[in-house]
Length: 87
Image (cartoon, rainbow, N blue to C red):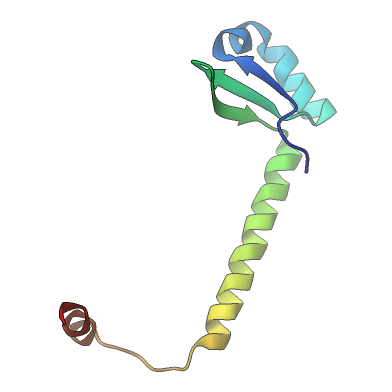
């Protein structure tokens, strides 16, 4: 995936919203939106968002599988945990 390809201020975004959306949708650009000179948000295409969500889901599934593989089945009660943390 590419990085932010261009930046616009919030004022410019108000004036160029249609153009910014078109560039994100059709050209696949990632356009940073700045507020007071600092990056505040990024306009991305739906395809980029879906790819990000799929990547996050894959990471979550991998973390779940790793945790499940490491689970030894031993459980600790809440009172045991509190006692351990208090000491």
